[in-house]
Amino acid sequence: MLTVVLILSLMACGILSWWRRIPNKDEPPAYPGALPLIGHAHLLLGDSVKLWNFAKKACLESWKAGGAVSFSIGPKVFYVVTDPEDFLKISNTCLQKDHIYEFFKAWLGNGLATSSVPVWKIHRKLLNPAFSPTVLHGFLDVFNGQSRRLVKDLEVEVGKGQFDHWIYTRNNTLETLCLTVMGVDIRDDQKLYSEYINAVAEINSIMMERIQKFWLHSDFIYNWSALKRKQDACLKILHNMPYFILKQRKADYQNFDKKQIEKTAKGPIFKPFLDILLELSIEEGAFNDRQIREHLDTAMFAGHDTTATVLMYNMLLVGSHPQVQEKIFEELFNVFGDDDRDVTKRDLSQLIYLDAVLKETMRFYSVSPFVARLIDRDIKLRNWTLFKGQSCLMSSYGVHMHPLWGPDVEQFKPERWLDPASLPDFANWHSSFSLGRRNCLGKAYAMMSMKVTLARLYRHYRLSGDHTKLVNKMEILLKPVSGHHITIVKRNK
Ligand code: HEM
Image 1 (cartoon, rainbow, N blue to C red):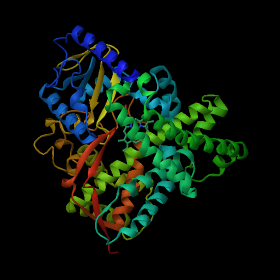
Image 2 (image 1 turned 135 degrees about the vertical axis):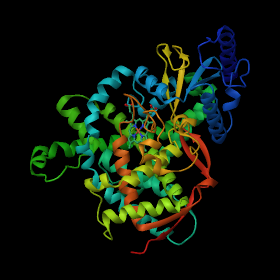
Image 3 (image 1 turned 45 degrees about the horizontal axis):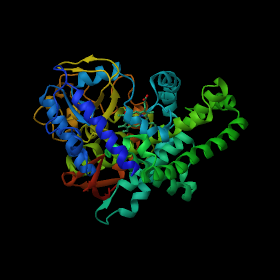
Image 4 (image 1 turned 90 degrees about the vertical axis):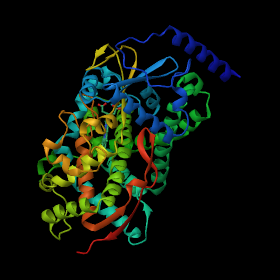
């Protein structure tokens, strides 16, 4: 009964705001199909396949309208921006994340992805060095070890026909993140491992359900819902694990002689993210335990699903394009010959075609199709003005599939990245990691770990698949519902 009253009250507020709101003539035009009171909310309801279809249509309208369009959920207005220069301008002008990110705070607290601008400025500065080339080169052994694991795990699928490779990329990436972020091999504790994996998957779908069911946006209603009870159960598992590891690592930290290790080390030292946070906390008093936990959770959240999804799409796309696969193999053969040795820092700079294939994968399937900012001042774009107080969805899908790419925009063509003349005539063509000052902190980490993984995978296996059978959905990230199956055979030495 209380819920009904609350929904009715919210609707009444919606009517009032809707009546009062007169769109400015400079504001991006509205997406067709708005209804009185609820705006476009009816178009967002339904499953996440429908949501993705709506998102793509909104981008199409945005292209037609010169880079931006708007839609509303009740009184709330969202702009959808697809012009790359506008995307960059908003990214650098409005650093505050949209209200929608508040939902994630229960898990991520004030980690970088969700923090308010004053906290973000201080913490981003402190954390930038944790993703420096020196630290990343210290991760090469882990990345190589994990690529061997993936090749070994996949052996059971050789010659057996089609299988879903998502579980393999997801588990492998999660293990890599646990090793480099928290310094633990999660395979050592199978119970903890499966509990944590399930909780991560569950929390993503809980967040997505809350975003789609707009009446659950109100904390007051959400706190009474069954979904909130499910969220609490997940959070218990998700928060316990990093606290447990933090406690252990803190004890180890007191006992080891960091300076001695640094003095005697020959190559780059492996230093998990947690150790860097501990150093900053113990030596500079920069973070308390809760803040350390929030940064660990954020790196796990931001790093694992994204990387695993790109790897999954990459394997499917490469399996669907035999000529691309042979070119990758040729390049790998030129660098490694018959040798199954580890990938070195020098090798990475030589894997130019593999780099292009990865970029084209991320253009073709924009795994993080939207990022959302709060418009905290009026901004003049190329063709429109965005007004203070509204929300803005900047679309990497909208940039990557923009008609400016030319008639081959819908073709998978890694070669386009090898010739600058074949790229569109604007600077920010690759927005998978977002743009501007608040872009992805783990960009270089992600590119390095994926290249190392794929460089071994394609030396060992020949893949086949058919990406045209894919049906995609939007669950925060872009994900396939079906059709993401491949087959693998061993390559002859
Ligand atoms: C292919 C893999 C990845 C993709 C496509 C990706 C994409 C993104 C995007 C689009 C954002 C901006 C999100 C927003 O504004 O809503 C972001 C932020 C972030 N990412 Fe990534 N990411 C990837 C991998 C990683 C990895 C491996 C890590 C860490 C190990 C990481 C850590 C972060 C962090 C900490 C932020 C927040 C940055 C800030 O607000 O200052 N990401 N990422």
